[in-house]
Image (cartoon, rainbow, N blue to C red; front, top):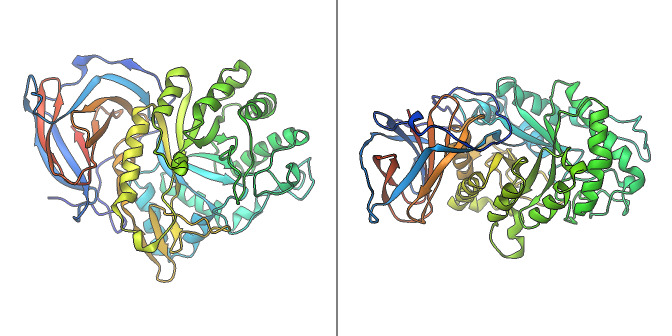
Length: 490
């Protein structure tokens, strides 16, 4: 049995491929893929074990024309393909950058390799960063002086201390290319109704154009420092009044700002190819928000996609995955991107909890099966307090640094995300997959090189023998209790 150890030195077998394009749905020839003669390489992460993205089996297929109802199966149909994967990654925030700067040099290199190297790590290709400050900054700040509506004083010098070098290092670790988008948490206080970057408030109509120009300034400042900005979300969590940086937009507010100001301004400034994503909030209101904006042709022409988060369970319910499917069904020409999720509140005594990873596995499978093209975690790194955070809104990250000792702590979430980001590469097409028992969750993709990748998550505490079944061929496997397995067909 060959083990793959992440962080301290991962051995892998896949090369990086370039990000794909927008999703489309079309069948491919059933004769284009046959499991006969193929090998199944099984990589496993499992509770109550040392298995972490470990190669645990190499199996073959045998004929199995018709499964019985007593046979537990994961059915995969490569002849039915759907959206194209943009990428998978995490956010490069002030908090991550400040924590990174406090690590010893060798641990900095380990972290970057663990996340971005396709051989030594899990191969992240997608990233988000904050425009100005957010809760995961050590202070509130803007890029302009007060009341400078012409933006003559615009400068990103604040970011040059920690965040910009950190992003530059991440891009280098990713092989020189990282699909990066920016998100604002709040305009400057003097542009808002409450004269405060925190505690909600709204953007004053008198500053709509100045705020649209602000996005242009941000893109050009970062690109002038060698950091390409692929896209933008218009506002982080636009329906939430938070104790940290926040700004409230109704669906009609966002629609009108997009079609009247942000979209035309980017076009006028030669930045019309930057991807604009609307909403950037939870799945609960996503259909109402998306339909209001995208049903307006003048707004829709500027919207590349719809961004969303996973915190709708704040009200006491569960994650509402079906709402993503409703948007995809109604607006199939637009792209769905998960832009933020984290576990919290942070507690060091829960850092080994298996539920941290399982939430990621469950969510990623459902989101991809409902049409999502890109998946971006929140902070890639936080310290031993779950910060820094200037409003004490501490949470978990896949990796924590104990800045007192200089050590890195890899949570289960890192490995669960890695099952997707390492093996399913940009440009992959999702294909049809379904499990015959509810404890097993599955999604599947075919990479551009033809390799089929099947993810199988066992949510239960039972060991479950099952068959991977493709067009009359089956391979016999066993899902360990509370495990994630990646099946690579080659």
